[in-house]
Amino acid sequence: MEIAAASTVSVAPQPSRLSNAFPRKLGSVSSLPCASFKRKHCSGNATLCVSSSSSMDAVVTAEKISPASFLDKRETGGILHFVKYQGLGNDFILVDNRDSSEPKITQEQAAKLCDRNFGVGADGVIFAMPGVNGTDYTMRIFNSDGSEPEMCGNGVRCFARFIAELEDLQGKTGTLCLFTIHTGAGLIVPEIQDDGQVKVDMGIPILKAQDVPTKLPGNKGEAVIQAELVVDGVSWNVTCVSMGNPHCVTFGTKGGPKLKVDDLNLPEIGPKFEHHEMFPARTNTEFVEVLSRSHLKMRVWERGAGATLACGTGACALVVAAVLEGRANRKCTVDLRADRWR
Image (cartoon, rainbow, N blue to C red; front, side, top):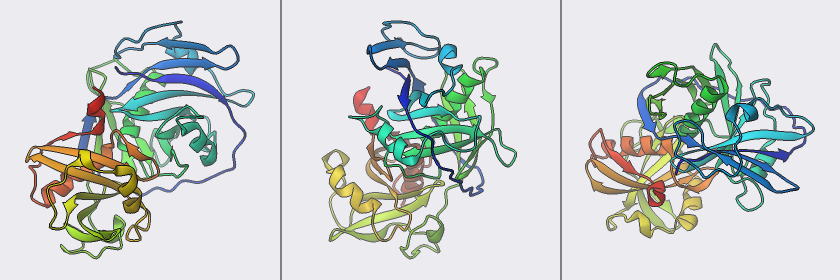
């Protein structure tokens, strides 16, 4: 089932904060299903309204609300209006921030919203802001721990669908290269397909160790490919890749058996990679099981978000690593954790 939501929460004003930009050439492509449902939650009388939107699977409707009626609302009286989207189970709170270059909530407030027990629940909060440097829009994202990454693959696809609905851009032609997006990782140009899927050029992977960044010394020129990383006394073979954000990809321990990703204790091992001293900006970590040269299986520990069902930049990074290590073809199918719920 493909679903997303609109809701309201009380917030307080936030201080200013600037973003950084890192220009980057465009290259590899990610094209995956991206979906949403609309939900209105009103505290007090606990009204819950759910409705389906175009190109989405049907959702049981208790009370219908239109996307336009929600999107026309603006923040008043300390109330934040938002929509919730998911891309392959990677879920985000989307905020219409086009009237300001500053986020409507703080990083601390974003972390509270992302709490799955006491907040809305999400892997991050994404803000749709005015474009800079000639782009149409700017995307900023706060992770569920309040930190700010350079960009997010599934997040930028959800962002594209959000903008398409806000600007009523969907369904006017076939495949559309709709707009340009400024992110902390550079320029992103999304396309929304006829079937509602969003295609995003993820850019050319960065392999130079200091640009990933990692303190591991380059062992293949300036790149870190199948190098040794000691984590809690265990030696892992890792390849480091940046897709605008840092990734550490591993296919298993040095001299150990073939990695079975379903057997991993991810909450235990994931943070040890993320906060390892070899990664000065922390890192996303992909644990990969090779099923065949064209079929890979991944579990991911995301920097600032923990274990998530999917990671778009991570899926791209692991294919790059698999090719560099000679484990896979250049065109692969990658199974993500979200497949367990389909």
